[in-house]
Image (tube, one colour):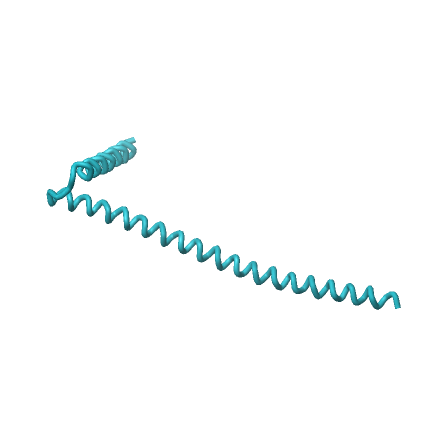
Length: 97
């Protein structure tokens, strides 16, 4: 008679462990899916930030060429152009080495 409770106890434990394993695998799949979605959203966010930056540069250029820009936007454009020129010069010097 003492064996029956032990066997039942082991059976209950085995059932609980099986359920835990099943839940773990399910959560692992969900975690992988969420990681993939996060990576995709992060890439989309990077793309949108890049597009926004390009559009801001285009807007500044349009404002500067149309004569409607204020002094601060003109200074920002000059600063950006100087940055590009320095980057180009740096690349040229690297190519020359």
